[in-house]
Image (cartoon, rainbow, N blue to C red; front, side, top):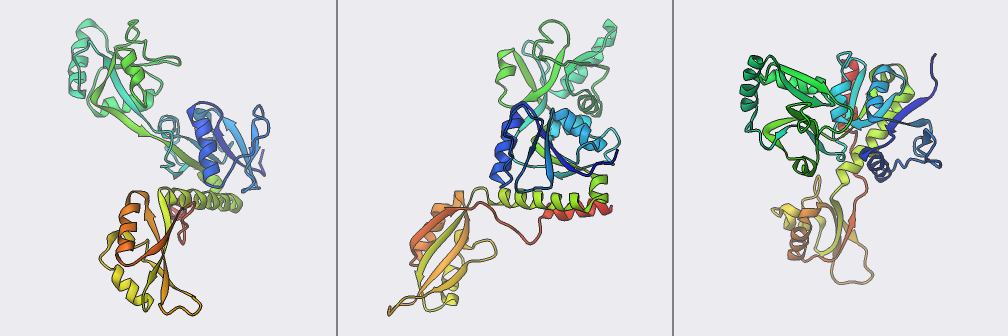
Amino acid sequence: MKRNDIRLALPSKGALYQDTFNFLEACGLKVNRPNPRQYAATIPGLPNLTVMFQRPGDIVIGVREGTVDFGITGYDILAEKGFGDNGRHLLILHDELGYGHCTLNLAVPEAQPARTLADLAAWAETLPADDRSLRVATKFPRTTGQFLAEHGVAPVKLVEVEGTLEIAPAIGFADLIADLVSSGITLRDNHLRPLSDGQILASQAVLIANKQTLQARPEALDIARQMLEYIEAHLRAQGSYLVTANVRGDSPEAIAEAMQGRPYISGLQGPTISRVVTSGAAESWHAINIIVRQEHLFPAIAELRAIGGSGVIVAPCTYIFEEEPARYRAMLAALRG
């Protein structure tokens, strides 16, 4: 049955749920969900979009199959479930939303001497003598199996586990685990140690879309552009400040010359300098406007003072819009390709 609506799926639970709400609100795309028990919501800034809530794994499958058009989920789940059709129906619109960071790692019991993948491969080679394979408990069998095969670890038996993984080696259910790690505290509390080179992948929240929807429905393409505009502008503005200062000078060119060679007050494409209209003042004043990264803020103020700047005002940036989002151009290229 053909749908007329356009759907965005968001995580219904877990760490990504609230983080996604907060992120979209910071981007100017606040989700309106009056009843937390309802499965649908809206984004007033995108009135033609219906927001739905699903488990992160179901989001990947839904976007791939076309039951939803856009989704935000973790890259770890995308890598595991997203490419069953070689990815031809699924397109990553933004792979670095900046939250939901974790890694998928191989971890062994602390008593096990293996510390590297080479050690693990050597261990696995001894097991056929006992008529068994190296047992790896994981919720990511596809990703884990591919990683182990690429590094020559064999023979391996992947044990899919739905519940807690950390207990699997302790009860003899597996020899080691492949699990998501954020702080590493849970591994240490369960006497497990990650392999030094056993990181399978790094993950964070990603925005994905159904490629066929974007190719067939111009209204979906328009929503994709709007989302990318807000997201890119917000991410670009994070940690940046608009700095305004008044400086004495005969002309904008003279002030620009005084600013040359000072790296912290160069701005994005250069400083914006305009004349300040003063009534009856003997001196000529100009206003400087520049964008400065947070870590460069105090050196920039020092450089402004060095050229006679005063009345410095600093305000955080909410958005920095470019002519066209780079990821929107990349999306159009991918659709054409």
